[in-house]
Amino acid sequence: MRILSGVVLLCLLAMLGFRSNPVAAEVFGGIDFPEGAASFADAVASYDPVFDVPGSPSNTDSEAALGPPDDEDVSLGNGGSITLQFTDNALTGSGDSAPDLHIFESGGENEATFVEISADGSTFESIGEVFGSTASIDLDAFGFGPGDQFFFVRLTDDEAHDPQPEDERAGADIDAVGAISTVVNGGGTGDHATVTVHKAVCPEDFGDPFVECHDNRLAGVDFAIDGFEVGSQVITTDGDGVATAIVLEASASGEITLSEETAVFENYLGAYVYCSELASDVVLVNESAPTGSVTFAASQGDEIVCDWYNLSEPGGAEPAPDPEPTPADPDVVTLPNTGTGRSQTGNMQLLVALLSVAAACAGVGLRRTTKRTPR
Image 1 (cartoon, helix red, strand yellow):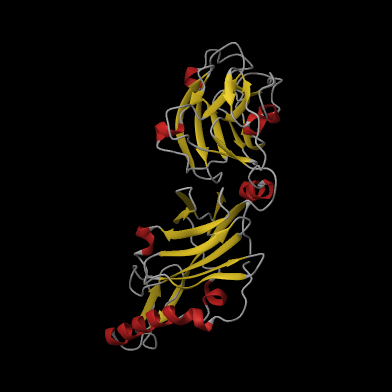
Image 2 (image 1 turned 45 degrees about the horizontal axis):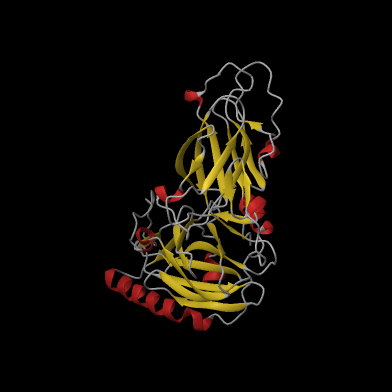
């Protein structure tokens, strides 16, 4: 099974553990970075410049924006953007009003840039706009704190405030992006954990949900991850029904609670959840989740995959119209997102079937004795 995709996979492959030795603070451009050069962006996730004038500027090497400021920059053009990624550290809030992020913009003009941040490279949050040298941002002012971790920063030129729109170097010129408040890792491979959710829907008469329902994926579903001391992260399933959280922690182990978005969970009879740690094959969760949450123990270095199956409720959604009903199939109940299941002769039989589903949900963990390898 595909566990990760695109830029999220690149992020995870580059992730390492917490730094075991202290790092000397350094000053760049008059800004004090407590974690030194490790504070700066490490990779380019995307670069989408917009040049509306004849010819293109010479500064189009997107990697010029990586690492500490060095007077080498990349131009965004009028309305263009660049997304930079931290791979050996995470941007966080500080818990106070001190600046947490600084963007180094070059050139003789103070060009405006919109700033967004993301934990997964997919869902971005706006944290305002910077103007040339006035380029520090306090994440706490936007509701984020030390428990929040971000790995991506997207910068978009504000073409409405470009002082030289006809110049071939129009738009913001980015030299570097540094996380003043950051969690740095870089010594071992076992000092973080990942939690990946595979979200699917299962019909009410399932036998083995892994076999029968694993490909019935749903996109756009939020899951909250509460773990160790970091507070909450919210991850959203992508087009493949997959969402991943990276958990960087100072403590060696602790509990993680995984909760499905309430508005989604309430549309179903319940959920069956199967979580395991890939390297050890240890099963962490194998049970129904009647409240929409499960809790399990995790340690640094764990790579955890949770198969989350919601049980479809017959009649819980508008059934698909049957243009040619036949006497042989008078009572067909359409299941949302999965297919159809046939009732017996009326409402009483349907009620009995629903009660059977609840019992099956509670006991399916006992029936699932074979080892499952997430795909």
